[in-house]
Amino acid sequence: MIAAANVDVLRPRHLKDALMMLRVAADEGRPLVPMAGGTDLFVTLNAGQKPAARYLDLWRLDKLRSVAADGRRGLVFGGLATFTDCIESKAVQKRLPILVDAARQVGGVQIQNRGTLAGNIENGSPAADGVPVLMAADATIVLRSLDDERRVPLASYYTGYRKTVRRADELIVAIEIDVPDGPQWFHKVGTRAAQAISKVVMAAIGHRVALGSVAPVIVRAHKLEAYVAAGGRDLAEAKRLAGADVSPIDDVRSTAEYRRRVVENLVAAWLPSLDGGGAARPAKRAAGLDKPPASR
Amino acid sequence: MKLKLHVNGEKKSVDVPPMKRLLDTLREELELTGTKEGCGEGECGACTVIVDGTAVNACLVPSCQVDGCDVQTVEGIARAGGKQAARLHRLQRAFLEHGAAQCGICTPGMLMAALALPKRATLDEIRAGLAGNLCRCTGYMKIYDAVAQFLDGERR
Image 1 (cartoon, rainbow over the protein chains, first blue to last red):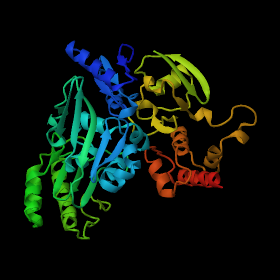
Image 2 (image 1 turned 60 degrees about the vertical axis):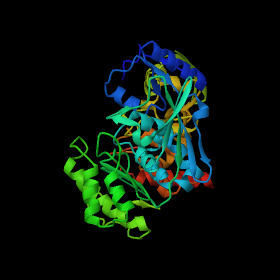
Image 3 (image 1 turned 120 degrees about the vertical axis):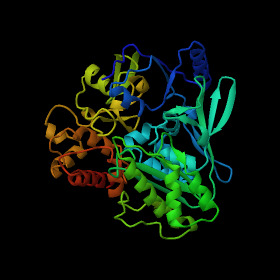
Image 4 (image 1 turned 45 degrees about the vertical axis):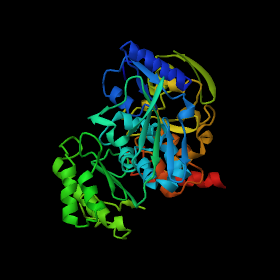
């Protein structure tokens, strides 16, 4: 149980009020911590982390709870769109099916019903399941403050471990994606099929590759991408470059050595699918690949 | 803060800190101890309740976010009093028939998660819908069987 008695929660009904509250709090030097579904926040509080003094409860900002198609290939997610919203959206199923795959692997249904894409991004976990897909899709984060709105590419949103470019007076109000062309591919390697935080997670759209749990932040595999974009298909070289793109560590869930090996295995599983090859199913015995990856 | 909500169809009003977990508000303020705390980190689903029709982990929901909501807990699904065994919910009877409970700690959460499933759920959808509920005794098959039988009955 958390020491909740002295914690203040502001509960705006409208976005404008929320932005005003954030501004005032930032100006006073007592920033508010935005809270959506609480699925990450309460895990740390229940584990004994001292709560922040003040939270901004976003849950009543219903207008942000939307997922919509935009133009021919675009998707726009409101700042409160949950993983369940993503799973149920026809537009996401059609245009970015690997986000549905990723969302289905975020905790159980109870977490998917409450956890939001924006929360997954802002919380900044290097193991976030949804973020690699968004990063491979070149997503743009829309940050709004009381008098300004700016768009930041997700690829430059993180400045360090759990650190983002969001200012204290800003809120993620939307995530915009113009889904790139190319085969989509997603695979998460965890301890078990459900309810496991990833040891390594990889998402790819065409030659765009994002990897999770292998660096302080979710990363794009730039060296690997440049190689395959130029037509490179040699597996040994692709593995070597992917290895140079990541900097995994030993932690409670896995070891650096295991993660490097799994990154190589994932690259081996993914590479043939890039040219529409049917060989997207890896050998079942390959380390960390106990089931075929989702390939579309 | 003053919180007004419906719990199992009854109007309730409680005065709790806004960040108090829904789980604690249910157990300590409303004395509904059927909802269990397992892991306290959203892994085990023992604290699953239904808020406005969706399954949530009550250990991860701040009480302020259920103000004005309709909350269903395991206490609400069977009618109290009288010949209780006969008045159990059909899902509870299916659990009994299939031996879908052993130690029982996961059962309230399993029941609530199962009640949030779509009526047409296939076996795969039942598995996915209950993936957030851990049972360390039964091996799950009896639970899936019970839920499948219940949903089958609902569809007729």
